[in-house]
Length: 108
Image (cartoon, rainbow, N blue to C red; front, side):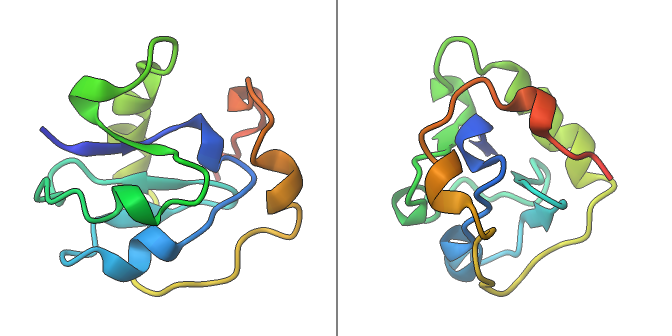
């Protein structure tokens, strides 16, 4: 089992989860975070730190968000690791409750 960042993180990018990760498994894109499945040690300490509840165990990803398991693995290969907490994106409070944000994901 590994943990997965899902849609709620898009355009929010809170990094409270990054700060507690003991193995630096988070990787950062322009408007989204992902967890590298080969680096994650399945400890789960990141889950309660996410203010938008975007992180799930891969086996517990809600219906309709299953594509985020593969997306985390794909993007983590190309995006740099993030090891420190930074400010969330400026409009994070607005985007926290928006759904169907996958088309807004910036891959570069």
